[in-house]
Image: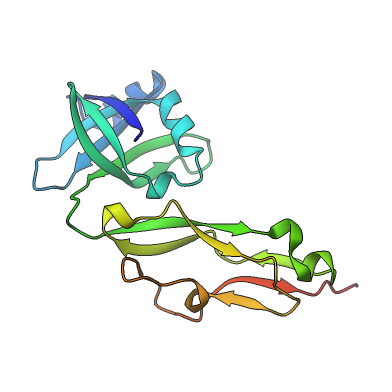
Length: 188
């Protein structure tokens, strides 16, 4: 399991946070688990390497503060509106016996062999990159995998077609919501 080192920050407010960001430090908060909230800060370079991973929103990892480990997930990332900067990160403590809401990335398998694309000349349209689920931490998948190799033009995969298990609860309101479609290419 991955680990991120953090340190406690004592100064709060816009000026203090701006000073941190100017020194390649990202302000953050750690909350939940019936413990007090902790104002923390993290090294910007390590955070950027971590969030480049496809499954960072559904990853459970350890945050190390003063040589103490806490099992956490990313709750929210606040980004700058137009610059490639992270303004603030919220981490939530994990309770192994309590279900949590998570965004899980959709991973397509068999894209290069998709019948509707390769043989029939269509295009594969992915309508959603992530699906929101509720699960115990030990059952959270890294990805929701969908095999598209046998899809033909006109076929659609909706949320209801994705495997359902007793361990995962999909939180989307509409079960008929499209995940992906294979469409015919129309010439103009």
